[in-house]
Image (cartoon, rainbow, N blue to C red):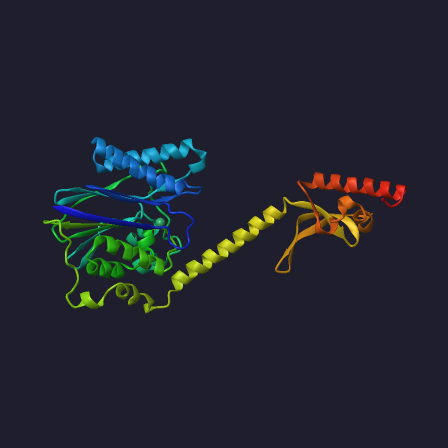
Amino acid sequence: MKVIAAAATDIGLVREGNEDSYLVDEPLFAVADGMGGHRGGEVASQLALETVEKLFRKGEGDLAEQVQEANRAVFERSVEDRQVAGMGTTLTAALVEGDRIRLAHVGDSRAYLLRDGELRRLTEDHTLVHRMVTEGEISETEAEAHPQRSVLTRALGVDMFVDVDDDVVQVRSGDRLLLCTDGLTGMVSEDEIKEMLQHVADPAEAAERLVRSANEAGGVDNITVVILDFSDDGRAQDRLAPVARPKAPAEKPAKAPRWRAFPWKRMAIWVGAAVTVIVLGLVGLRAYLDTQWYVGVSEGNVAIYRGIPAEVAGFRLHHVVVETTIPAEVAESLALYRDLDQGITADDREAANAIVEQIRNDAEAAQRNGPGP
Ligand code: MN
């Protein structure tokens, strides 16, 4: 059996970094979706895939055992390095062995098999909502929109040991395997994924088109896609229906199905993200302003301010902490304090007090000696 592989990954439209990683090293293929602040996610997904690849190359253990070792490597790093403490990653790997694929899987990335126009999910999500679905507490549809749908029940790097799902799947010529992170499946329906896998023959183009669809639907997460085409002769399958081929280039599958219903879910995600950004911005600004001090003028007198001597859109970014009895006019008559009304910044409150004391002394001296030259 011959394999033609292609992959695509993208940061998406919302995230600040791409914490997904993928591995394409025939006959070993994988995707990993890292999580954890301060580059932790990126480190976790890369380290996991590097570990699996290294052990595979050395011939140590089977795929599930290699994933176990990857878990240990990520866990140990997260314990040793405070910068990446608490990181973790999903991992979905496929090893091609003749006409079989060996799968190993932890987390909510997925493997799908497209055969004869049917798209079959080969992996089970290790998420809270999936558990709730299997226990009959909520429906599949409810799970898709559930606010906690990305909460994992299993991930690599969280504990010393992890349960790895493993499976063996027979493949035949014409089959197409998809490995993807939840940045795809969270944004694009399985029907749309199937459509695109069925109709775009070139695996690289299909991968790119899937990523683009996820971005067009909002791209709220990193998106990673690996596609494997299996054939006896190593040639790409002609997947296009004869009618569809000439008139269905770039746009069609991306356009048609998406606006069936108003995407409340996506809008809620966007609004939520925007509110979070604004709130974090304000909290950060407030924290910053609280560390800033300066000496300026209030009601004609020298005063100590907290914040910065500026206004943004009518909001003053400062408030008076102490108003002295030193007339600003007297201070401003001295060359040193000429620009007092624009604020003299201080490192902290003590420094601000010191500046006020200095102004007081200089002003008193000036008044004793009469106006300077
Ligand atoms: Mn993700």
